[in-house]
Image (cartoon, rainbow, N blue to C red; front, side):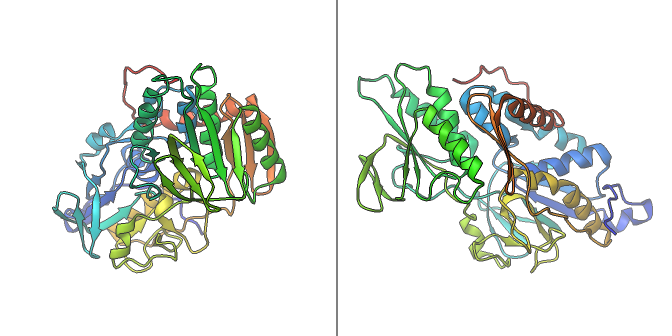
Length: 393
């Protein structure tokens, strides 16, 4: 039977022997922030907890496209971990992890950190495309880098009379949603850039036909040039070089291509899948190291699931419970992962469509309002900062 016992403090007779158990959470991703919230609300295991992340603040990815479009201020996406950490008496180390030998973590500043139970929620790595042209290529993540890169590009929009060009590489849901948000963001500007979407296999290839048609129609109505049939081979000072050696001018390039595992994981003893992600069983525990767990986009489950925030959020209760169970030596529970999950894809203009597997609903403002309520409710459940910041756009 699936045990839904919530994380709870250990009984007093076990307190002495587990007092020094150290749980180290690597990364402030959706799952780990949810775990901290669950412990703050329902009781934490009797262990020291340390969060290691370069940023104490999580920007909720589900609201990012609407922020780019100008519908949300940045503060509305932000979840601050400080309040949760203080409530739990947990420690925070502001840095990246760059190595793991199976026992000890290596931090970016050279320090070493050991933990009795270690959990990774570090997401995926940004695309390596165009790393030698940092002034022209804007990474999709981390969020701060995306927004800084867009601001740099926008600073040059009105510098002269030349029309600027912005290209997004990737025809999947993420690339299309981001491009539609950018089209809405720039729609009313007199210096609106030319927008190109490079989608080698087409828009939402493999998705339901009604979804592909709806997104293609939205891109066309937004004035986006969609380039299909060719991928991007390289980048030079003038722009993109396609795989047929034709050139596509671009002043700014955003690579929204497939997920890539953090490269440093390849130098660890952790068992990984063919794409480099941490291989785990259904309890979210590493297949090679019984004291290691993973969640979110960095995990490789026994049966593949899409890299999606929906699955990361659903893993919260299982990971929170299993970390507590690992502290006390209890049997772990399994994550029940549905083969498909509902996705609400925004179209930039406060419309959204819904898709789950082969089923879909056409774009409507009602679906956007539903998405808006879901996203705001998610952020509101967590401590978030009160930043005095205007909306974008």
